[in-house]
Structures are given as structure tokens and as C-alpha cells.
Amino acid sequence: MTKLQKAAVLMLLFGERAAAAVLKNLSPVEVQNLGAAMYAIGDVDQASLEDVVEEFLVGLSGETGLGHGAPVYIRSVMTEALGEDKAQSIISRINPSSAERPIEILDWMDARSIAELIIDEHPQIIALVIACLEYGLAAEVLTMLPEGVQPDIVRRIAELNTIQPEALRDLEQVMQRKFKASSTTRASQIGGVKAAARIMNFTKTATEQRILRDVRKDDKDLMMAIQENMFIFDNLVKSDDRSLQTLLRNVDNDQLVLALKGADEVLRDKLLGCMSTRAAANLRDEMEAMGPVRLTDVQEAQKGIVATARRLSDEGTIVLAGRGGEQMV
Image (cartoon, rainbow, N blue to C red; front, top):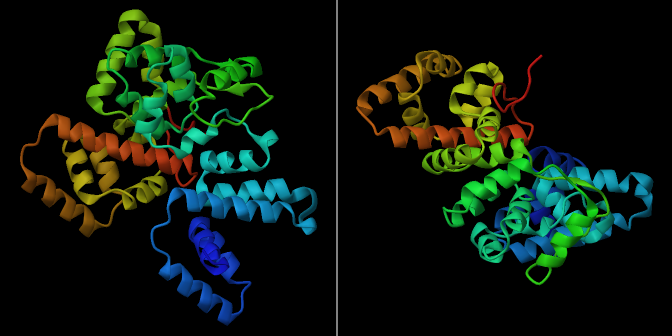
């Protein structure tokens, strides 16, 4: 790619606010050229994307004018562009000492590839690897493992706590033949009940119920602790109107209609109250016209909305309140 094309890729990664801030500092001709390049950018493969971001970071870290604030600035820009997990993965390759989580490179792999890498490992190793992943990706990997081992993996994740550097080094030695990992010299917080609960939030309802049922057989208290930390659809009633309005703008209308078919009246009124009168009336008409629907379809629609809510919460776009969500004061 040309330098202009690379700049266009970065602008598309930065997000609207950051990109707008950059454009304000360019001349009209530069804005026109960069804008045209952004429109012309097609699909960019992952390897090229990583090369562009890494080249940008290397160049940025070499700018003497940034002084001691460079690492903070780099982290801020990359987090805004890629999210916390992927930003850390890129940064750790340029400055390994900044890595806060082991095996960050896995966040760039697809779920099936990760599952194939770890499927033959000891359950404790599998639990450690999955606990290191972003929650949505972790849920995908979990569901691709044999059903018989899934409850054991969730239980092991829930029982994880602070992992010492020695344990992480052992993990990396076990996995080094399968993927390139970044080392860390600091203790890392991996797993725990909340991590297990968040992973379960992203699994399908049938899978969630089966795993929790099996975990309950071995440890009822652990199952209840995981369940208590899970954010479910009914918890949305405790969130503020502004957050719910933002959530509704990010949810597919058909998915919302289906989800509300199985919602209790209080939550239904709460969500409809966050919409315009006309939009709420249209939604009620669609719900009535839909007729009877399968409970499993309603549950999956609600699960999808919860996943969207979790994603927006993790991005800092909304605040969730209730079980497994933010504490409101």
C-alpha cells in the first residue's frame, strides 16, 4: 500500500471523533486526498492491517518530540482505534515489557483455529488460554470444544485468580510450539467467577443451561456464583434511559420485536418508553402481528441483545446496572 492508503486505513480504524480531530489539522487539499483514499479502501486482510498499525507505532515511538508521554499516547490512540485487547496485542510486539496479558496474539485468531490449537491440551491449560481471550471470542472457542469438557473448563476458569509469572511462563512454554506469545514479568489477573460469567453471557441459551447444570452437580455454590454475576435480559430494567436509548439504536428491529415477546410487562414498558411514541406503537403492532413464537427463539434474541449491551458497556458507551453489571450510586 502507498503511504496515502496506509493513512486512510488508520483513519478508518481511529473512529469518528479521532479521525475528525486529525482532519481538522490538515489542509483542504490534504483532506480531499485523504478522504478520496478512505472511500477507495476496500477489504484489508488482517496481515496488512497489522503491518500498517505496527509501522505507525514504530514511527510514532521514534518521534523525539513526544517525550515521556509517548507510551500513554500510543496506548490511548490504539485503544480508541482497536479496543483494549487488540491494542495491547500490537503494543506488546513493539514494546514487550508493556504486555499485561499473556498470549495476546490469540485475540487476532479466529475461534476455530484457537480451539484446534488447544483441544488436545490439559483442561487447566485450556482454561488458562480461554480465560485470556476477549469474552465473546472465549465463548465461541468454548462452544467448539467437546460438550463433555465444557463444564469442567468453565469451573476451572471460575476458580482461577491471580496467576504468578512462573505459571504464565510455564503456560507459554507449553504453547510456544503452537503460537507466538508475548512474555510478561508481572502477576496477571486471569479468570475468576466474573470472567466465567461473562463468557457464559456470550454462549447460546441451551449451551449455557447445560453447562451450568453440569457445574451445579460438582459445585452448587460455584454455579450460583457464576449465575449471580451473569447479566441477563431482565437486568436491563435497572439501566438508565440514556444507556437504553443507545442500546436500542444498536439493536436490529426484528431481534428487538422477538426479544420483547418474552419480556415481562415492566421491562417491555421501560424499553418502549425509551423510544418515540410512533416507534413504540409500530413495535407493538409488529409484536401483535407476529403471533406465537418459540421460547428458544425469544431466548436467543434476548441473548443477542445482552451481548450487544455487554459490548457497548465494555467500550464505555453505556452503563449497565444489575446482576453482573455496573454498581449504580
